[in-house]
Every structure is written in C-alpha cells, then in structure tokens.
Length: 223
Image 1 (tube, rainbow, N blue to C red):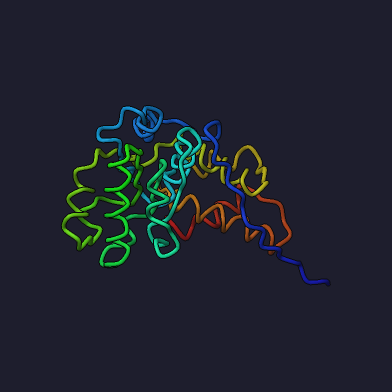
Image 2 (cartoon, rainbow, N blue to C red; image 1 turned 135 degrees about the vertical axis):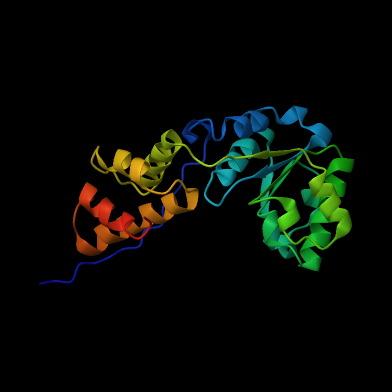
C-alpha cells in the first residue's frame, strides 16, 4: 500500500474586523480598540493569554489607524525614529524582560511616539509586573499605560474560535465536532490552537475524514 503523504500546509489566519467573534470575554477589549482615538495619553496595553486574539485585535487596530505592527523581540531590525513617526503596535512585550537592548529600544520608541502624538499599542501575556522588565523607567511607563485584558473564553467564544481555526486551515468538520470540542475541551485559548493542529495532523497522516471520535481521542490528552 502506498504511504499516505502528509503535506504540512501552514494555516492562513483571517485577521480582519469581520472575522473577530465578539463575546463577553473580549467585548471590552474590542471596544477599547475601536475607540483608539480616545486612549488616555494615546496609548493602550492589551493583555491576554496566548492565542486569545491579541494579534487579531492588533491587526484590526492597525488597519483602522494605519499603524505598523512590530515585534518586541525584533528591535534590532527596527529604525526607531522612523517607526515612532506613525501609529505603531509593539507585540509580545512580555518576551523582552531582561534584554537590556530591547528594553532600551522600546523605551525610546515609547517616548518618541508619544512626543510626536502618535498612538501606541502594546501587547503581552499576563501583567507587566511579571514580565521581568529591568529598566525602571520603561516599567513605570508600561505600568502607567491604560490596560485592557481579554478574559478567559466562554463556551460561545470557544466554539467560534474552533470554527475560525478550522476555517483558517480550509477544513469543514462535521456539524457535531465543534460543539463537542467547545463543551468538553479545557477552556484555554492555547489548548484550542493545539487541539485543532493535532486533529488536522491526524486527519492528514491517516488519510481519514475528521470525525467526533477523532476529536474525542485528541482531547484525551487534555482532560
């Protein structure tokens, strides 16, 4: 029998405003993104667990504000003065704690952007006090930034996220699969991403259609 070919095709996430599902977990965060011109001091800190939709909201804001999105871990490739001359989002600020060069770069970007009246969006997981930021002036500016958090998902948001992630992978599972996953999987954004990836991988490697039983077997590793 010929070996089943397994092509690892990367998902292409839909990041537009129309693809963002609103629930009680993220409604406040979305409202703050929509009202970006009223941010106190022209800046906002958006926090939430990994996979919660921070990047999606960052893209929604970037489209509305004409902003550039950069990653805090990539400051070595960034022209700070040029970047600060327009609206900017810095993603994954929680990843640079203890990196003196990146912390200094973000400090200068923050000050330059605000001095020029340019809005600034920062994203990260958890709270700034746990990020290990060593530069006191940067930490004080981050902690002084108005913050909004994406809360843990409810069942409605989980179902919508499963649907979106399958769609991103061009997968249409049977109607009973997504409700089953939303009811029985742990309420974790990160788990949702992992479960969808594993179901996709199993379907590809086995050459079989996705079924509720396949979903149940994948979930056994999480419950």
